[in-house]
Length: 588
View (cartoon, rainbow, N blue to C red):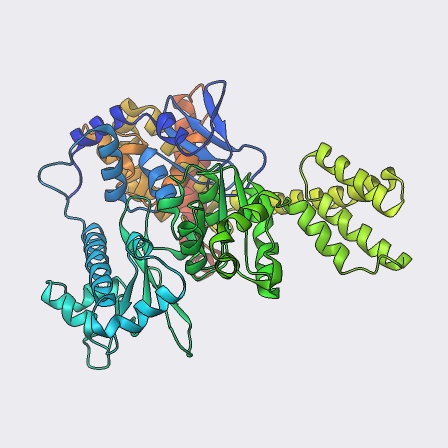
């Protein structure tokens, strides 16, 4: 059952798109539109546009686009109904009394409920006799009772059916537990516990829902950590552990660490702005998520080789998200948890000293390059300067480049201009590479190559372009829909996706129903909404004439009548002559 038009119209009236998006993106007005850095891909030059008048957004860089519901779906990783619920709550609207028969939404709701009950079960088991080793482990790591309860830590007992049996008693089916990744399907077809004999860390989203778990073995064995796989409510590449607490920590910066225990130890020590990734390396989505809540990130990974490598990967992603990046190297190859505990009551104060003295990512990278070079030899100095120039070439600020070039000049005894010449050379090379990449992406987009929304576009480019222009014309000139459909019914379209769009749009208009992007968003996926937005964005601002629409229809009819060379060869002479005559007439 679809949401009623009346509800969507009311939601539309109360959900100003610029207002909603401004809560996530810093927008500036430019003429009729508002512009900002796209939250869906890394960029330094704004290509994210919000059309306030027509209530849609469109990124000319990555192609993301749609109405306000589509934006919330993308930014919050929600399905359609949950995005509508979030906007309705924001607008002070109640969802329709009849509800919506949405299978995916029902499954998501059951996963949330299952995770909440599982978290209660695990926490309860921590204080049962079989949970004694796990509780002793946590206390041995220096965790206070208040900390254990604050994070809702728990224990998954031995045996393969402890949670499964408990959840069945609570009314959950095995397939729901499998969907939540709390269980997997056993050989006999029934559910089997996924987490067994592990300390459990609930993962909570920004709205307070338990969305996943991390489980740690206390002894030997592998994997040491086991995390919930991606589900309908959880994507490890888009969530951060303890961000629900850290975003309200009152600090201007975030501390990014590697593991659950590091986060918990830092929070207990008073550093409530610490977060961690969830069993995966930092991703672009993580970086953008952080940028929504802070301007500065301190990367505090383990000091071993793996930790340094992870920091090197994280720095450019965080920088591309517009964040100021600092790197804290914990002395003695320790992780933050171990370092704080090693100083007892003085641990928090000692860690704060480290934190306050932390240099930025440029200084960290330059120091790392220098440490690998023999500065007593000419070859070592050259290697250091070459590596350092490569670091400076990644900086967007000319002033920043000049400052560090001056330091290098004094440090090595070389003219600053020589350093800057090498930097400029590398910058030009990087810019050429980026422009080539962007040009290829634009070529692929325009030509329809790798088009997952309309895969028929590449082989029917002329028809697809005419179809898209006609769709935009119909949306912008709805009074002409009846005439246009009588001239070109939906089956006259060449590509399947454009036919579906055309049929949906004209069908709603002829039924007297509203048609704009927000009205269409429950009919199409986020990617398809991005295509619809691109179609509307490409339409002339001043509108088009009826003659233009007629030309689009003529092109579509002509392309529809085309047949392949193999078809011509298999046809008889009379058929070919008739075909050629028909094409000739269509060209007129």
